Length: 212
Image 1 (cartoon, rainbow, N blue to C red):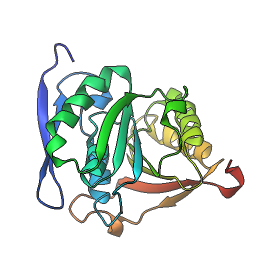
Image 2 (image 1 turned 90 degrees about the horizontal axis):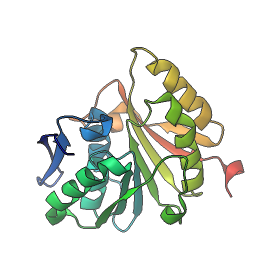
Image 3 (image 1 turned 135 degrees about the vertical axis):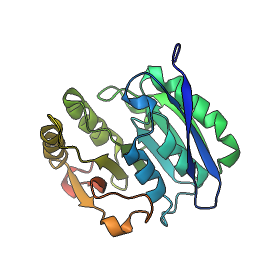
């Protein structure tokens, strides 16, 4: 974070409280709040029972989605690479007065050991994690190892048509469909204010034959 300025994004919760999320003016893709994170965060408020549920966020970046789950009573671990830990911890500290569950930040590099994150969580959250071609196989491997038979993976992503993005998305879903069932959530079930035709929310669960 050295040399980067922070600027704040605010998001109102359903009860009128304000989540304040620090972002960095310079750095990797995880340093800012992407639209898909906002869409998923607001979707979490649409009637899901999160209190006392275990939640793991992958590629959390600023930690916004996990923070929203913790506001609504979930026990949350937000994860990303080492260089984003300070930013996530700042955002946890800045919103601690709103947390009704619990939240912690940890390092998780896709494709590496996930033993410390077991047993499988009730929910795995991921927003805009489909962008690096070389990260697709490690990401799917991590999902396969983390998810249990009852784990619901919520994946929100913005459909992008530029460059290699369509090819990367196709490859991700090809890998995913080998071991997971995927359900697309209709747009009308997204938050009325925070929705977009090109931002999709998926519920993903392990196929029965692959439960172990």
